[in-house]
Length: 169
Ligand SMILES: [Zn+2]
Image 1 (cartoon, helix red, strand yellow):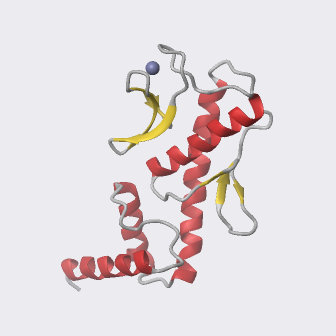
Image 2 (image 1 turned 120 degrees about the vertical axis):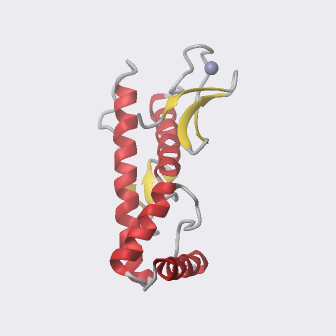
Image 3 (image 1 turned 135 degrees about the vertical axis):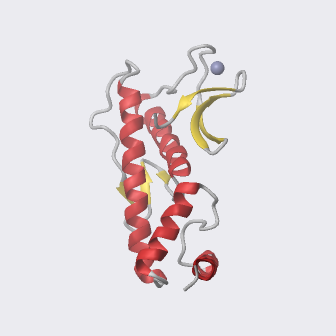
């Protein structure tokens, strides 16, 4: 098969996924790491029906969540705040099968999108259990929030609209 034809078939498959009510993420999200994974999955498994595709999606999401959450736990521990005991780990909502970070469901399937949702869940968890805002902008003393800026997950301070740093270094 010609590569262009293979690519066209891949795009048809991806369009089908986007319309499938069982697909719980946006397959047209342009993040390169997500598109590479989709293409690789198609190359390795072909036109997997959604029932067989779901476990692959779940495995990828859990790996991304675990990696991002480990990074945020490390950043938090290095901030001099009292350690979270135990550190926050992902959980799964028993009724929906959704991967959760505290109260935050994770829907993204690209690295940056997952990192924003993870950081959001972590921040709310710290607020709910430790009763303070973390992280604070060192320059303005106000709370920073995770945002997707230029395709990257960053801690953003709205006081002067500046970026503190990446969520996952
Ligand atoms: Zn600031």
